[in-house]
Image 1 (cartoon, rainbow, N blue to C red):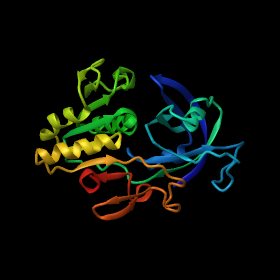
Image 2: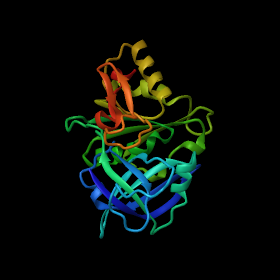
Image 3: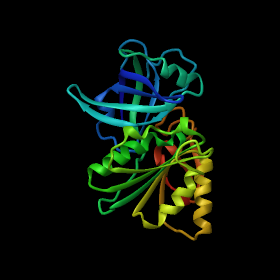
Length: 265
């Protein structure tokens, strides 16, 4: 884990109420894998210490690393997020050159077997954030990827033109305004049989529906999910992200955010 004063490179609305922010802080990107996250907080000046936090009532925010790209100055990384409250509104208002105190990469990311040829990825709403990078990495490694994008309506769907043409995309919306009408979990079950590994990120309700559907169909295939929980530190100090699993109490920041679906639901 590294602490850095990350400089904002780009910040724009990508679709709906969803923004993408790119940062320059190569030390955060080094060693990161899809599924890792960072903790973000406001920073004044050139502060490089996590102990030198400004007087700001907002707690640090855990954010999945969305993408990583290589530039002449080193690695840059981004986050993808919905503006739903004060903290994310503050993030969306940042301009190039602004700095944000962050630390990471944190947690346990997705684990892809080199022998897996067919990967199934399921995104519910903003849960798409870490899955784009996973899809890109897998395609680059010669693996076949099917990505299910689910949302309530068309404005919540990640723009498919931003994806590699080698990624097979299935879009589902609850109101039928884009793609198939229905739930991402329905498309998940239709394609689960043939995949070598399955990965998902989204709301807890989606995970519960996936687990119930798998039990009804008597599927025992492992599915790697990323849990989202509020946390104050991201480093297993505050114990604010404790969750109950079939293997006892676990911390999302330390033992996750990657878990087996069956261990949680």
